[in-house]
Image 1 (cartoon, rainbow, N blue to C red):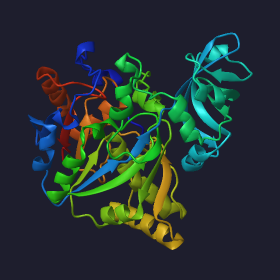
Image 2 (spheres, rainbow, N blue to C red):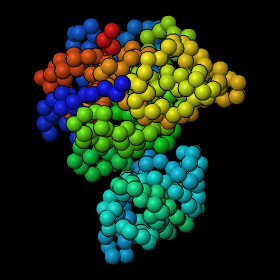
Image 3 (tube, rainbow, N blue to C red):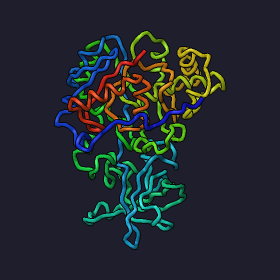
Image 4 (cartoon, rainbow, N blue to C red):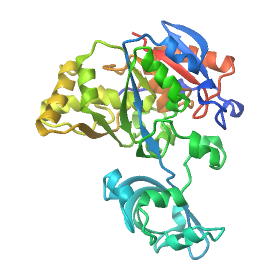
Length: 403
């Protein structure tokens, strides 16, 4: 049954000055709020390894943010902003980034009312020769609301990844109320980012340094990766009064078979770094259910966790996924998810969560509330009352799931 949740019940007072507009000089110098067994305390992020008990498993999202925002202009001078979301032709991220000369992407289009037809040309205010020689142009192929399918063409022989690196800007969150700057190229990216495809950073990971990760390993916690490419939907506010009216967008993810085996075998505490890792891990159960019932895993729908009772154990669901991949000689599960996690969610895998402080009335606040219950208010009141910095470049928290 789809839950009826009034989004106004998940509001808190966040003023502009509490939003961190820039990162701290040192990634791991941020504050760390620790919530466990109903109690809240304050630490420093670099102390995280000493807080974790050894023997657990910590899962990171190793997606990489791409400079996916491009500015074009029509012959009339009208400005068109294009924000690449996901590849269409070719549809695979690796092939789309390697494409030379032409490619099609689904994009968010700014000032779309001014763009009916015809190619637009990349803005080059300084007349830079590399940009001029690239001759990057965009043509609107299909339009649907604020998004559309755009065909890009260019001439300099670069792969599309190189085109974005040369011509694009990092799409920092709109609530920062500033333009992208050089600091964002480094700091709006995790130190372990690997696979290109996100248009927003998995910001819980921004606090981790190689030394912190190594200390976590040395303390006896095993480290693993998943990859979920974060879409622009992460920036979209909930506009409907009831959460049942909010639409989640599909985000592609991949999980290695070795991690599926470790999760299946159980016996250890699982800590997810960020809400994107949470959504990936908790999607696995429903992928396993479809594999049990249909013989193959399929994308996870938004309301799958709430539609009915499921008779299968987590171990059975994960074991079915493992056997499915083994029979085909495949090393990764590759799917998409629209899963939404709200109060009433049945947790299957994640025991602890490292996450930043999220926007009021957002799907991420609902995820936190599903994880810790009504104590989410206690957590946010503590953070507001003790000088914590909020949102993407803000401080962090370690939350133990309320049993």
